[in-house]
Length: 376
Image (cartoon, rainbow, N blue to C red; front, side, top):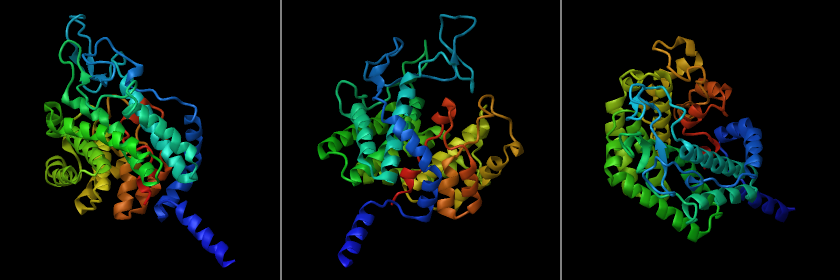
């Protein structure tokens, strides 16, 4: 009997993840949906940037390409350069690569979450199949840069602000860490994956587009720190991690956040509600990656929480688009509860929509699989 008990304990310890009360609570809440989605994902083949091509791209078939959302044909000069309509998305612009990246992120992170819950390696194997298609397979891989993101017809072939599209990869990076920790990614494959992310980090920290994005004073600057933090954590680049942590504390928060916890530059946009939610999500994700629990960050959550609980109390203009689609289960409520133990935040987060279907909402929800962020 003693031998059987010991064997059981060993088995249980090996097959148990993140046994914190919060992990257990979130697992119970989301398990059914995670497994339903994961089983559906098992049927899906990888789709990378090589699956779609736009003749308007200045890059090649392996280069990520997207067009600025808020740019439209000039009604006075239909064949001329596009003009901007801030906050109004042009549905005719090329977004296939961005959608493919979001799909990739959702599949990999959800398969990883399913593996965490079930310990069934079929989910991990399928996630790795998609990972190799994006980062290793020379026929389908994406080049590690965003030279041609957020292009504007008739104006530029790419822009620094296009770098924000790479936030869709942060849950991929987190999934790779988990799968590696449990010896599910072959060492040689992990070397190649790391080389891809190191190449991207070198590009995004040195190219003029990357520097321009880093210096942005709004959510773009926040998202530069968020993605670089996630990728540096993956490849264990301590120097870059320290740089991001320092920049977050000394530049992002002091220069962006008001004393009441709001982000004035986001409130000035034509979609102030959505942009405010988005920036607080990015702030709290950075804090989670670096294990920062500074009291000042609590103010950001406190400012937005009343307007999630009761959106009708929002005192600023309504968003020009997607006003009705928000809020959803924004991760800053979950990370906020984890850091500051405010039960109301978690209770509200649990009641919100965890699986939105609107493409714009999904795009602006950087953390879609909380299970992978709560494991030990």
